Length: 289
Ligand SMILES: Nc1ncnc2c1ncn2[C@@H]1O[C@H](COP(=O)(O)OP(=O)(O)OP(=O)(O)O)[C@@H](O)[C@H]1O
Image 1 (cartoon, rainbow, N blue to C red):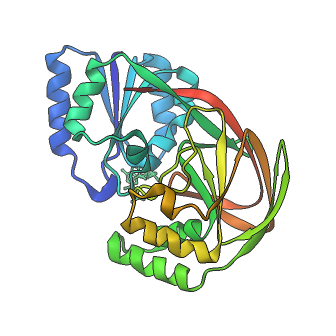
Image 2 (image 1 turned 135 degrees about the vertical axis):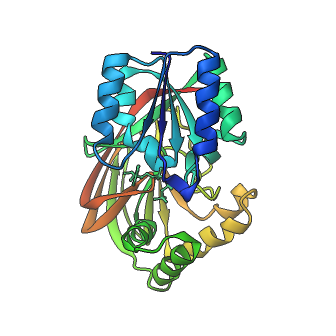
């Protein structure tokens, strides 16, 4: 198969029917052997795994938020298709990271036309969970968790949970052991970064590269948390705003928490953990450029 197009119909509350019509037309004009898979939120991994294993698509183009891309990492990494990502979620950290500024239609045409790609590392957490972009423990994960549980969506609901988390910021203690050192620390958030920027464009660290075989752990203390908010308004001034965050770069690490804490990966809540082993899977994915 030439192209498998995976679309999350609900991501970002965005209507994708125009885009789908356009994509269908272009693919039939080019006489491409293609298939469109719309996610349902149930058994998507199995369905896509089956499609990829039986049809071996040359390119897989994913339309949705970071969470949609994350759903299929395990199969993408095994089968080695070229991946095109079209951001249409509510928060699109990967779009910021890859600087995807073209419209969805333009991106789709670019991906069909190009055979060039760049390779990207993945992080493996506790031998089980794949992280493409950013994960964290503490304040932000709690915020994502409370937002997900809320029946209402949208910016106002997000703001409500943001303030309740911000007013009740709770520090937690943890130990980080890397190949080189052991660190005893306390913070309100511990970020695990393959990339550098939140979906809003807020940079968490300035040294991360997604293909260097390394990751960054960023410790955010209560006083620094307000910097994160300030940084929202000055996202172009990376070096100035985030100079306070302690950043530990490593090839592998183990985090031990004194008490279990909620972990979010690429915007999705995973579970509570008191121990997290982090390893890098170097150059595990091929993204079309
Ligand atoms: N048809 C569907 N109905 C409901 N949920 C779905 C559907 N398809 C996918 N999902 C869910 O969508 C999530 C991924 O959404 P993604 O993060 O890409 O978009 P988003 O709009 O940015 O999300 P959010 O608003 O939660 O941040 C996954 O948890 C997946 O299970």
